[in-house]
Every structure is written in C-alpha cells, then in structure tokens.
Amino acid sequence: GGLWSDSLSDVFQVVIILAGIVMMVPFALQAGGGLAPLIEKAGLLADGQFFDLAIRGWPFLIVGVIVSILFGLVDADRYQRILGGSSASVVKRSLIWTGVIYIVFIFLALSVGTIGTIMFPDIVQSEDLWPVMISNLLPGALGALVLSALMAAVMSTSDSILLAASSIVVRDILKRDD
Image (cartoon, rainbow, N blue to C red; front, side, top):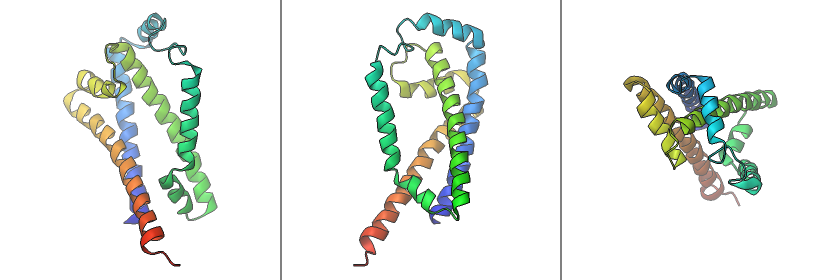
C-alpha cells in the first residue's frame, strides 16, 4: 500500500496511456489521408478556426501558463513523490524521466487532437473529440484498449490525489502531535 503501490500503479497506467496514444496516431494519420493532406486542410482552416491566436488572444495563453505554474507549486501528490524518494539522485533521475515522458505525451496527444480537429471540425466541445475519434477510427478491440488508456489517465490522477489528501488528513489532522 501507500506511496510505493500508488507509484507502481501510475507507472503501469502511464504505459497504458502512452500505448493508447501511440496506437491512435497511425490510425488518425491514415484516416486523414496522410500527413500532407492534413497539413493542407490545416492551412485551409488556419484562417480563423483554430490556429489563429487572435481568436482567444495572448492574455488567454499567458493566463494558461500562469495557472499551470501555480498549480505545479501546490500539487501535493507531486511533492509527496519528490519527498518520498530514496535519495537525491533517484529524485533527480525521476524528475528528468518525468519531463521526457511529459514532452512525448504532450506532443503525441496534441498531434492526435490537432488531427481530430481537422478531421471532425463540427465537434464544438474538445472533450468529445477523443471518444469520437476512438469510435470512428479504431477497430473494436483496439478502441477498447485506447478507451482504457483514457480511463487510466483519470485513475492515475485520482489515486494520486486521494493518497496525498488522505496522507495530509492522517498526518496533519488526526495524528497531530502538539
């Protein structure tokens, strides 16, 4: 139990998430006719649908970056993992690998999201895009696996937040040594 079990389950869930996204990329590219037609369609849509920063403006982008930084400062489960490391070198190596995995994850997820936005321009709510892509582009069993990757993302976040919150309650409220 505890942090070690949570960390192991998160590693397993990250593998499932990355596998799901990696599987989605070739199917999305194939359904879109390849990279060149998708880039051409994106160029046609760039006149104001989703590539124009003026739609939301620089303040939207700046606020998003600020909120992300502030969230990172108070993310209890992240601090719990950093402070739970067995040594400074283990923590340093873990943070480097986390950064590398985040960059790969973000690049692949944004690529699939961009392809989906080009292929399904009628979808207004961005959270509807992945389920639509899964149901329209992937065969049944593979679609179920990618859908499980989405659920793994939710579970990974939820179990880490619940562990951090319960640890705070137990250590700081119930077992308070005054």
